[in-house]
Length: 454
Image (cartoon, rainbow, N blue to C red; front, side, top):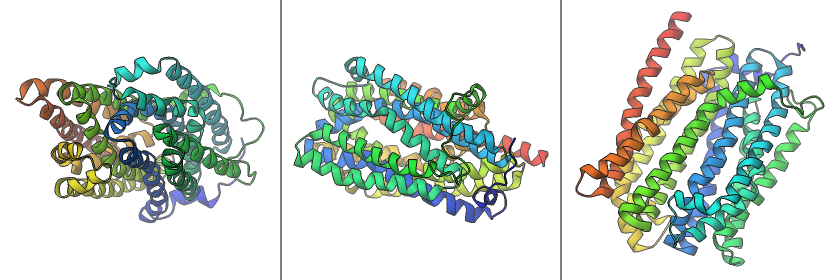
């Protein structure tokens, strides 16, 4: 096994101050994830103002479909990038290099399978996700294009995760920002200029991602990089594949569970409030999503720091990284609480000027954001367990909010209150609160074990 010395970009994870490392690694991640969230937000803004409230409802129906695509990309990307960080901490550079080939091959295989299944059973899936006769055409037009480029999307997210773990958070950030900027420029051209509606928004997204992949490839083609494309990595390694997928299983299940929850909620909103309630849910989701992506950027910055120091058995540094990330995440989601509670009208006006939709969305937004002060900590706790390879605990924590709490509450509460739609809305903050309590208990227990192990 090669004993090449790791470059400073890897070594610094175990030596520099945690605060400066978190700023260095998280800031590009925050910028990248915030920019990435603009994909959906910009599409929603242009579609909402250019195609109407029903188009927004159709986009809401398509969201779980898109999340399923992302889930399979996460299964490969997050697992592989976490494993790379651990291997770099262990100074095992040969294995770290072979992981790159696995990322490309697995993303290609899974991307093709998801694309085939989605295109063949498009309409039945969309109806199951909450589509109606009035909204399915919008959802179908969008998803057909997204699925055709699904392999490219998987590779894009997978390579970005690898770049962060090998010490290139800024390059990952630039790739994302370039893609978002191109998407913002192309959206109005395709949606309005070429009169392509929601289909134009999807085409703009794929073109922007294709150009970002070209940028990423220039990095991995450089033989001076410790991890780069070369002969010997282009085969599936059974051990690497199993380990990567086991680590990535937690965020994968979290995303799948999230999709299932959205499907349940979509159908509950459609049943008790119709297409307009579904559009309201879509608007609120996209507003919260922007801030949640900032927390995910913090998590991305924390991940290589925690993974490296866990591999190096430097537990104090690992726990300090978790603590700082959790504090920052709480502050971010606190902003969601303040904006949603005190200026909800202005948040909704970003997406639509439809007065019916505006009126129906303000009160639900206040309900949904009431628990946001707890959500940031819960998100960081789940990612912490993923970053140290404790897949079982991360999976359990990922599923508590969505499967154990949110689904039962969303199904039961409407039957217990006089206005069923209010029961659906209140199920969201109630599940957030319960899952945050579970996360706190699990983190407290795990921290005690690390303190004893020092």
